[in-house]
Amino acid sequence: MPTLLDIDEAILKVRSPAARAMIGDAVAAFRAGAFRPAVVAVWTAVMVDIMSKVRELELTGDARAKQLVAKLDQIEQTNDVNGSLQLEQTLLDDARKDFELIDHHEYTDLARLREDRHRCAHPAMQGADRVYAPSEEQVRYHITCALRHLLTQPPMQGRAALDRVHADVESTLFPTDLTAAIRLLAGGPLGRARPVLVRDFVVSTLKAVLRGPLAVDVGFVSRATTALGAVEEIHREEVAKVFSQKVPAILGALEDEALPRLVALA
View (cartoon, rainbow, N blue to C red):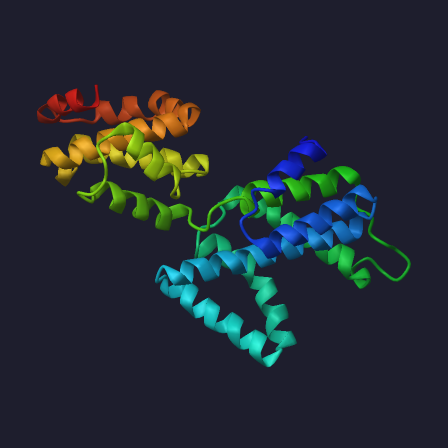
């Protein structure tokens, strides 16, 4: 279980100023033993962070983000309380399904936070004579999950992030110098990527180099090979897992004419 010092360090990495303030309030309440207010503040931080990320995605031209931002703006401008409550009920699902900001397991953890928030903020859910009291461990867990799964992560993960990185590597402007490639990729979605994004990029890039339509493009192979080396430097443990678990199957499925392409990866 992370210490409060670990949590304090993680808070400094929260990208949204509003979400950072809310999670700071949650930690302050936690330290004071006010566990119910802490849970409510954590959930608010999650909602604020998702809305902040959706606004960032809207600036990239994401059509789904544009629709949701328009809805958010309308709610704010008209002070639509009912609309705000309805949005709160669906925003976590939107983050998983529409924007892939979280995966299934992360969604499960944050859905537990949502349930605890409702139990803390709505006494009627417990009955007139009962008050829900989350444990210290529960609250610490909720804070940790919010920080790890969402608040410290960049706005793009999932398919959108993978497509963006592939577009970068396919561009003739992508560097073939390893140091420059590390600097470029570390500043994008792969810089603080979840393991699944690292895995998907490595596997898909290997397939593209070994048997994809761009495998005959010497320039692309050079850029992709450099990108794989850069990702290995950034996420050494994750890339090692991919190579041990996934690469044998990829190599086993290669046609004979593709085997010389392995030289490019040596």
